[in-house]
Image (tube, rainbow, N blue to C red; front, top):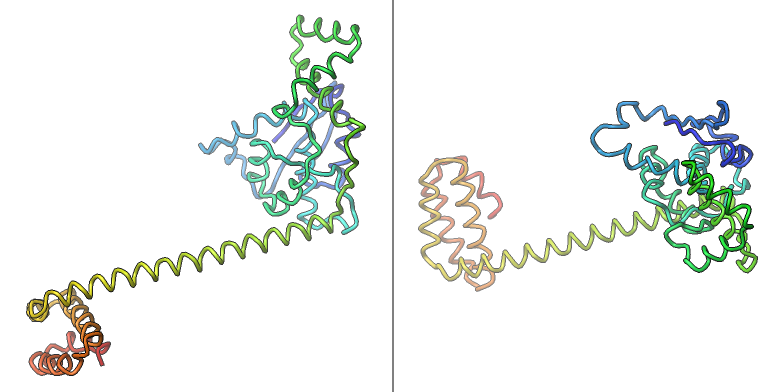
Length: 305
């Protein structure tokens, strides 16, 4: 994945703070542009457009960077954290990346960045999202610009400069980020991020385990309810069930033997509940004697012993 960025809009020194020890990304200069080349050995080139919409999902990343959103590079920094490149005391390059945009989430998923680590990083937010910028605050920042700056931007917009809107959003974002009334946020360390990611992973595993237990209990409860309904139906049918057992046995095939044995198991359960187990055992003995030569059927009666 290669991203071309106008050098006048994105300072190289800002990107170097994220990428100086990141193996999967390189930064170079080509004319008036910065070239960010992102690669991953585990991602094949044909995966970019395999029908799952990755290209469309990742396309907005460039516009977000041009608007001053550098969280893409924080995610690249996280790949080095995941690879255990940094010491535990290394501070994060920006204190938080939440809330994640859809394109950032797609990038993290596509490049296989640990989801728990991403979630830990995204628990804090220091980025003013364009969709969340109060109109009054935006207007105040734009109004504070000099007339000369506004005229220059409007002239560039008239001339068709494609970067004017992104540059203006970056100015507004930076203006909000520099708000003196906002309390300072202390950057976390690599060790703290890893510890938080481990806690998130443990909580997720515990939640999954609890869900499995709850699902098992639900299925057991439903199975018992179905069993009770089946036994009630068996009890109501009376002698008809015994005749059905004989009919299934006479079919002389494996499926019929299974059905006959299943009916006998239900009859046994009903007999235990009704206190007529002796009568059941007597009739079961008679069936054994009658069909003793049907070895495959007799084998299926082991569960009734």
